[in-house]
Image (tube, rainbow, N blue to C red; front, side, top):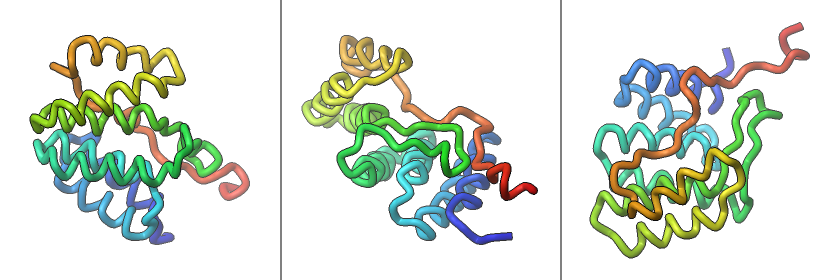
Length: 157
């Protein structure tokens, strides 16, 4: 079996689904070590950090994910085998929520405003509500549970 970022990401995603975020973080650590440009790996590690209450580390991961977007509004992982699009507004939203929970109100609201301006789908309308409520009571965007990288049809033959 190949030892690659996608494999470690899948392992982390399975542990996340099982609510074992410490082991998920270990797998996501391996994923981003294998591919330092793996934005969705930073995103999901940040989600696990957030859920464990490690808000500063979560914020750092969301910041890394945003940097890996390199100014693009999204990364489409479908051609790589993951039925998921990572949007910059989701990463900004997550970073903003972390900053608000950390008491960094100005920078948190700034991230939420930038996320609001970068919305691309109806699913992002929740960002408007979060801005109105100043982020109180909101959690972070994550990939849907059970979503894994899958090999292409060509590779399965």
